[in-house]
Amino acid sequence: MATILRKIAEQLLSRTTFSDLAMDRARDAAVDTIGCMIAGSGDESVAALTRAFDGEIAGGGAARLVTGGSASPSFAALINATAAHALDFDDNFHPARAHASAVLVPALLAVLTRGKATSGKRFLEAYLAGLEAQAAVGFGVNPSHYNRGWHATATVGSIGAAAGVARLLGADEERLVAAMSLATSLACGPKGQFGTSAKPLHAGIAARNAVDAARMALAGMSGRPDILERPQGFLDLFGGDNARGWDGLTFEEEHIIESRGVVTKRHPCCASTHRAVDALLDIKQEHGLLAADIIRIETKVGISAARNLAYPEPADEMQARFSMQYCLATAFLKGSLSLSDFTRQEIGRAEIREFMPRVEMQSYSADEEKGVERLPHIVTVTMRDGRILNKSRLHAKGSLEAPMSVHEREVKFMDCLRWRNRNVSGASFLQLRGLADVENLSGDDPFWSLIADRQSP
Image 1: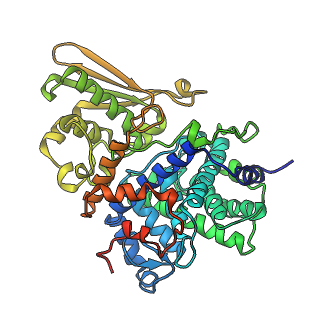
Image 2 (image 1 turned 90 degrees about the vertical axis):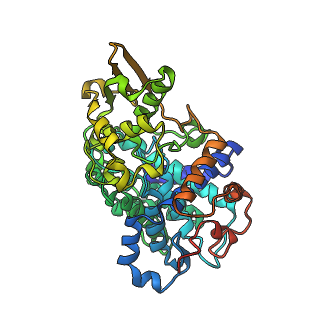
């Protein structure tokens, strides 16, 4: 019987054509991730990495950095993926329970070194291969793996991204299997780090691991092809109490990005807040509410979401991104959430701090969640006049079920450029949306001038 990794590799190599819809969605995900990467390039987590590895960066390398300059493919993946995830504005991918694109896109860019070109079309095809691999790995362990406390971006994301990088580098089936097997030995990342700079670092480490695993595999390194399912393998050690394994894994003709999509973030904070934020904004708009009208806001969310949101009284901007109280209070008072709401100065604003105690959060029970892939997040607003207003959201804005328009994507991209003090115009957005038509994509390509910080050395 074929191992799971071999089954995944066979699928990735057999899928040689992609629909226009799949390619368009891959392009949108790549552009969105690049915007987040630019915005996050000035974050302290990225600055700490560049200080820690100053010697490796100063020595240069073949791969380009979003911060300017260059480094080895490994360090470029580490730094650029950390930047992509630094502000928690990058997309989510439910089948993997991961920030799929924040790992995949920087990892793929990192192996497009100076002198080594590919086409934009092949780049997007490799992205789609890596995404399908993430979904397949996640199928066997999630949500149990994620609920157990593993940050799947760092685990499932790393394994799947290794397949995407290996495909971009021209790997055959044996080398694809080896890349994913080696990435399994590198995968780690506890969700207990949420609310600290270690969380975006998880995406950076995952991207670096994907690049390293793929390059080692192509150089002849190998691991067990049954490492996902065998005793003392990934499922056994990382699966959690209720992981189902891969017996039911199938691949449809329709690519996973067509059937499930990726969720483009509307708000620059933990996705566990998004459905509640969207529901509260819906209530505010529908009823014209004012802060003085409200006694209490109650939210009911999934167990993993409640665990993720561990900071009812955030002390800094990173903790604020993982605070339901801060995100709901700010969204209600300002009517939206933007990057500028997550600064030391903003999180200390008196009107927000005074409103936050009105926000309460509870989770579903284990029995309520058992056997159900997804439950709605519910917001209940108790009014001073005695009314009780309810709203539930099963899907956040930016999902396949509630998609963002091209204009909304452009507004977000502009917000990312503005945050990094870049020239804010629609030209960069339009140029990046032409990614599929780029013939020679490499570290030397003018495409990189749209991404890298030209003010940095």
